[in-house]
Length: 309
Ligand code: SIN
Image 1 (tube, rainbow, N blue to C red):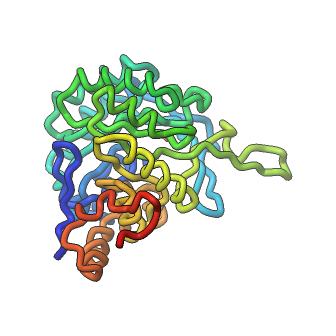
Image 2 (spheres, helix red, strand yellow):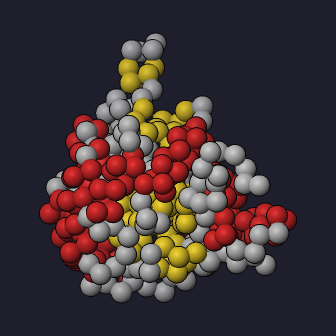
Image 3 (cartoon, protein in one colour):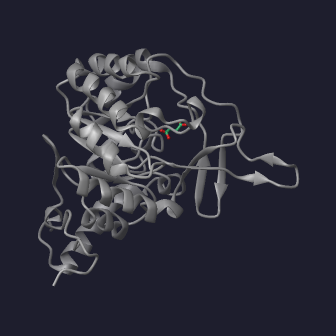
């Protein structure tokens, strides 16, 4: 058996496989497909201060390689999350990450402070990068100073490990990652969805009511991998890879590019049992290569892009 355990800042995970926010409910909904003990952690759907009804339908469209979503952070708000969801995850045999979203820096800090008191929560993922609110302007994940400001507020509000979820919709993601790190992030998640759109030309209509939407799935893997690699070169804190992951081979590509853990998202919609099988497949791959621990591979990509000698 290879050693699959990894560390994300002060947080030890049994393996590097996490669910991606918004694709796996709050986590336990999927326990019959992917039991929590098979995964390193579960990341919740984004929770906001107030309930949000989400965007107008149609808000999902399947493409040739993945799909577009414009959910608009639909959720029942932090009150319902604290009351109804957290007691149910209290005994989950895995790490619990709560993903939080806000319209301004103060809202993120307020959410962090409310969650700081709850032992069920192991870490926070701060959603700086939802493309489906505010007209897709992405203020917190396109400006390093704003990313730093939000993360500083969150850092001051909680002692739990905090991870900043970044957007690929920028020219130099490393600069945003550095801003988040300067604000006190214990790590960054790279990346959220790419801005995209789809058109029904016969009816001259967008396929998604908000026109623009977040594109995820197999098609974005090369972009996500490049973003994760850039972040890993830019910051000293751990990077969590996310984008188009559908196999244990994909997981190891992100690990070699510099990620300490990897999130599985869109692939779980067609196969909700997939996240729960990846650790076993990782073990097989590492054993076949004679690698004793997945940690040996983190960031092992040769800088020039060549295979190490
Ligand atoms: C959404 O709820 O619109 C998606 C969330 C995200 O991409 O951050």
